[in-house]
Image 1 (tube, rainbow, N blue to C red):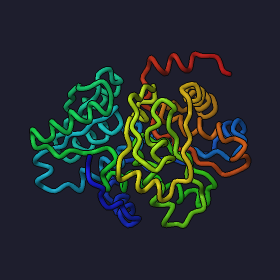
Image 2 (cartoon, helix red, strand yellow):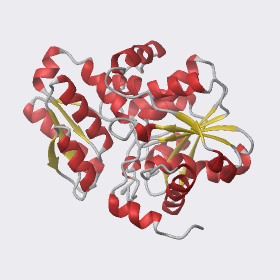
Image 3 (cartoon, rainbow, N blue to C red):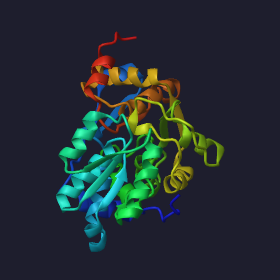
Length: 326
């Protein structure tokens, strides 16, 4: 396990905004009336699915790669991913001329694999799931001298993805609730860093799936919790153990964690398509799934739903959207 590092500051997020601006999009925060009517709240969607790689992670990848030392650039990078973290580093590596090796588990989303290779990433397939692949990536990094990039224990990544938090508060200074999908927590920690600076009263709610609840159970129990499996179609949430740096930030500022079912996620994918005409991957739909679960609590409130990514593979999209509406 990696040692706990110093968390990023608000100034780090501001610096990241300048660093990444030439390379990524400022994504819209949109009020969708049909979705608001369905949810019974003033529902604002932060459309990270409109980002250059189709997900929020690229903000962190660009910030980290842009600030590497000369030695780190020469050594190249290695990471483990189910897709969006790898795409972000591959994209950034291409922009800055840095080699990026990406380890994915067996049976990983083939369309995300293809995207990572299209951005210039070198793919290695190892292990039955994310955590097995992580062990392989750490071993490979040590063997070849690459700079290993953890998907959460990296202050520069958190500062980079925190820039979407800046955009939320720029566009909607006083939200009541912000729902954020959580795999290992870089996104929600970026939002926390910004919310703390503004002394926001917004309740920040993290979302995981019942089939991959390690971070939620760690948050609730106050001790590290690992699970045996993370069997969910929401690959961005499919982790079996927490990360030290992000857990420390989450304990400081996150108000609550919510677990949703696979059925909740697929229903949320359909609702987002029907009411906003945006395709969400499983993790991207998690914020709405949790808001549906807390509908009585958020009724009439200003609610931000982070649609963290739209990289849903074609077979899954077809199967989910073809089902009849509940």
